[in-house]
Amino acid sequence: MIQIREIDLAKSSDKKVFVNFDYEIYKGMPHWVAPLRMDVNQRLNPKKHPFYKIGAVKAYLAYRNDKIVGRIAAIDNFKYNEFHGSNIGFFGFFECIDDQDVANALLQKVEEYHIQAGNKFIHGPVNPSTNYEAGLLIDGFDDPPKIMMTYNPPYYIKLLEGYGMSLEMKMFAYKFEEADVLKNEKFLRVKDIALTRSKCSLRFIDPKNLKVEIENIKKIYNKAWENNWGFVPMSDPELELMADELKLILDPSLAPMIVNEQGEVIAFALALRDINQIAKSFNGNLFPFNFLKLLFGKSKMDWLRVVLLGILPEYRGKGLDSVLYYEIIKNGMNLNVKHAEASWILESNEGMNRGVQVVNGERYKTYGIYQKQISSE
Image (cartoon, rainbow, N blue to C red; front, side, top):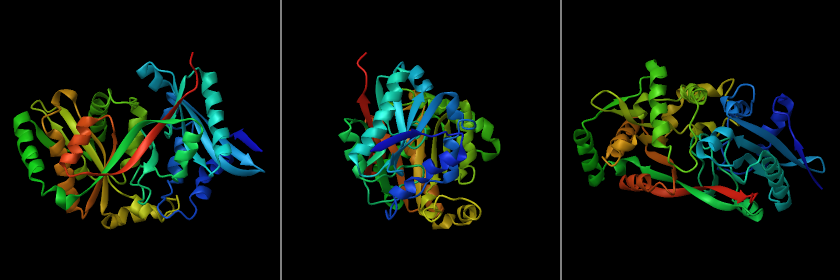
């Protein structure tokens, strides 16, 4: 018999059991990289994490014979539904043994929660929204996840579909070898004329003036992505927290910005070195000494991930994305980076998919957001 028990996220002992369960699932899986416990704990802290000002999370554990066999969270994102005028509930932090009955019990609990909340659909997984780690890996299991990307066993696809969920949106990850990209003549021609024709100039993020830079990024982020499927504006506290978390690994030369003639930032990109190459040995713990490996082990990271690339709508189609990619690639090579991932890019974002292919990007992983209608009213 399967029992579903809600845990108290304000109770550290409950949350510890919830957070640590994934170690049971991924034991012996060579490509999994344990997320930092401190990050997951913070994201599941209703008193401290800013997500809880615009959303709510209920966390559940599944037991069979007093043994934990699964976990899940029901997530209500009030800001998302207000922005889209929708009634969508979410689920996330899903981990489960290879057992359809257990998965059904967990997802049924989420469905019951969202029916009571008045939602008509459930989407997921998101942890806890598309502004964080999101999507189920559905192709590309033979490679470790890059920084801030998800990983899961292949059988999760079967479990979600077995519950009646269907794939709502695909998200792609592209990889490219940086040396090969810079030999692409078409790419080089486009980037050479883009700044001149647009009458724009290039600069890099100023870490000493981070408050102003966050405002620049927020403006572009919210305008550039507002029409994208699944987008939800990031609140100021969420953005500030993310910036604070990235300070340790941010390299300004991997965060180019483009400004117009008036000095207004109209495009930016953010790439991060793939700390997962080192963090794989951390077992989820940054302290007491593993943070030193991040500080002094950067030369061992030969991958980077392009996390964000945004251009204000009125400046699109001018080749500015090529400028941003070029600067990241060139400066990445100066840092001994040899490979890069651009992720994730929505299947419906035709412009971005074309742009990455111009840079000789090879689609090598696919993620998905699943959905189920739970009410016809």
